[in-house]
Image 1 (cartoon, rainbow, N blue to C red):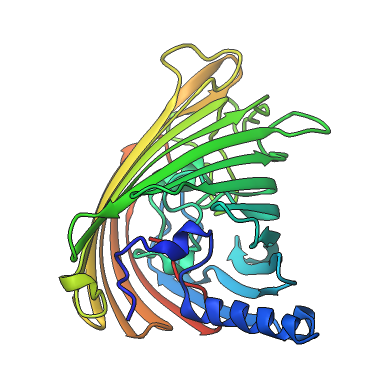
Image 2 (cartoon, helix red, strand yellow):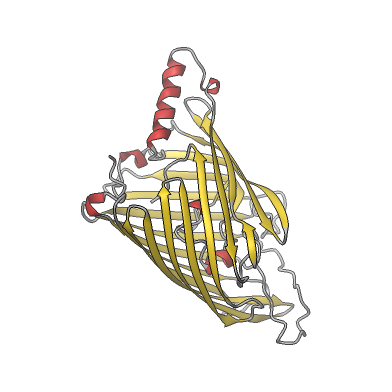
Length: 389
């Protein structure tokens, strides 16, 4: 069995480490060599069913009280030929009592360029930060950290071009550059609104331990004007609560800086029995608009610890804070949120998870600061690529 903690050579050629993905690619190459085209193969199809019950709505949340659809996915992917693979992912979720269908991914990616280089074009999850490029069904908690929900809309995807380079070094070292349209948060017309640059370093400390660290930067060439939803003379009791929808960025600026660090431990690399995972991320956003000074910026972070103490059982704790500046004409209102999470999850198999989570919020400037109990299911079937480190 492949050691899940080892950064092996499969990563150096820019491929997924999923055995089924490599088998599928190998079969397509063999068929092509025999005069058959990869397009004659059926694409892999995967479905994720996600739903939850939440007893109280939360600040920067979207759902509750009651039952709500989560992040339900339908995804199709396959090799196109010996140089390209393609993927299409649609998301179905509920927001404000309405069911919404959204195209989350529609990209092609190269596979045969060599030198650890691959190119992705179309719509995809940005490589900014640690969690953002991962699908939410692989998360350890029922909700993304508050800093993600406010600054990245839980997970930021966009249309554009991505260049990945995995360097031939002893340590795993990947550099990613992106040019993105940025229509939702940038006023640039007929051009690229956002640029991102990120790097990941990682390696093994022993047969049982591994680590990864990352730095990210996003440049918004011309931040869009953030519209006020309330008159700035409203009574203070009418606090403002934005960023409700999981895909909507309500807080952004000209420059975003991020850092992340992850450490994992499993006995001899066998994470099917036990695993401890520690992770942390920090975000800072400035240049909010023309009226912003050096004291006007967004800032947030979280730390999380997850322990798989039995093959089917995991528990975890997470704490995070976010401090935001909501624009109101030529001045800003302060918002802050502190969030603590405790979760317990049961996974009957790799394809099914039931999770119980308790979340406690404190802060000011939001209308729905509360505590909540969440009960979530995440079920999947079909072909699924390996999750990232």
